[in-house]
Length: 289
Ligand code: PAF
Image (tube, rainbow, N blue to C red; front, side, top):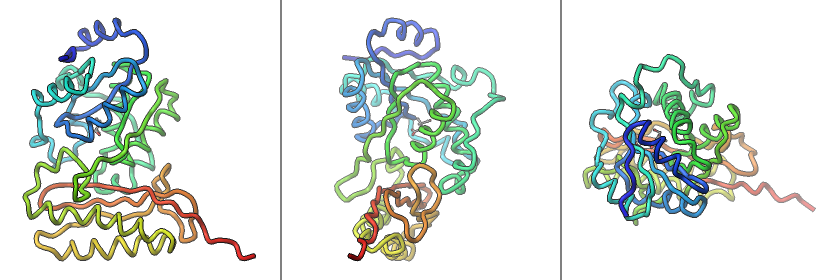
């Protein structure tokens, strides 16, 4: 069944007022792929009614980033939503979302200025601002975000906790191609040769994960060895960062860290910015008896 498409606040308010039961929102920038579809399926598991928002948010793109060429595939997105049984699509234009340039925005704080925030200054402020607006406009009970954007998910959880936003945040696992490449709307920019180099990201994460029994330094070294080869490949990987961080603060973990961590990587292949991560658990050194 084709979802109800709301393009204005008024249209959304009218369809929202008819919702009975719980509502889940899957915020997206469109160009929907299997990763988004798995989030929609998760949304169906946790709520009675499922809404998807489609909005390419200019506020989270920096100068020189891919705002203009970001894929816009509205007809195919609606087909994907229909196939997944989405009830409501909210697809505002830029004028609807930002009738006037926002003067008051969300400051992502120190957490927004580390890791991905270093390579993309201002990105998390813009992302949190639009997520807050979407939550206020759609008023879902639950909102679902992909774990591929681990820092984004951590920051949204933090914003919701710090500002007491009345919504439950649920993460959905990363979906990968057969070779391991994490699904992303940006993968469609990659040539065949670039795609081969891009595989090094997930291969590095896998190598890091396998080295977990050796502790944090071993994890980073194993991942780095894979990435070093990709940096020298043709076409090369331009590595932005490889970090092992605390999942809730995104600060780098200490040498003797035990418990959960996230191994996160980002780089550019050609002009395509790619990110990926895996959770890593450090059980700790067994105590001598
Ligand atoms: O992950 C995305 O697609 C975007 O950052 C989001 C959460 C829809 C906000 O624009």
